[in-house]
Amino acid sequence: MRIFVHSCCGPCLIGVAETLRREGHEITAFWYNPNVMPYREYRRRRGAFREVCDRLNIKPEVADEYDLPLILGRVLAPAEKPGRCANCYGLRLNETARRVADGGYDAFATTLMISSRQDCDLVRGAAAAASNKHGVPFLDRDFRDVEESSHAAAREMGVHIQGYCGCIYSEEERYRKK
Ligand code: SF4
Image (tube, rainbow, N blue to C red; front, top):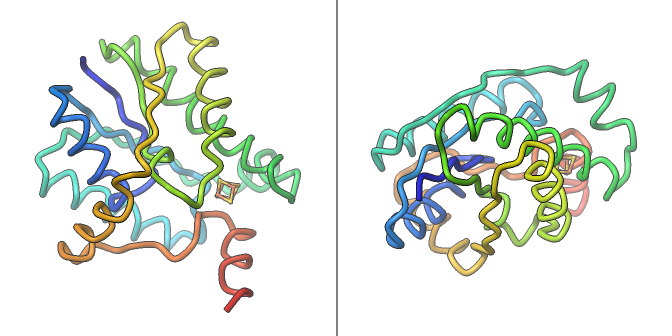
């Protein structure tokens, strides 16, 4: 199948791309993550995404939208989980699903399903809603078995690995714990 893979970052893309390719799928990696802040971190992650695509010869598609008013005003309006994350997954996966038919892909997937730090059931729900809305199939796959190897490969490549999920709330949650 031709699969359009929403990619939250480069390090998570590695394992998902290798898994899908091993199974014979053709993939295009899609960057659309306006939830990542602040801007310098957004730029670093976007750079890591591009570097992984270059190194693994993956075709990239980039929606380079850094939109603080959208994220702060709408997505992060509920400050707590799971409300804000449901909005955040919904925003990104809707945009992904919206592009599937136009791009001639058979289905979409997301690297969010590789991460033990993400709420995979919530991701699945947002993907199902996006799939219904745009009439395109979601490849519902749990990639968490390759999370560790994916990040190990990223370390070997020397690409930026983020320390927190993306929004300013997740940054605080991550570093307050230290
Ligand atoms: S914690 Fe992550 S998924 Fe949840 S709103 Fe923040 S950036 Fe989005």
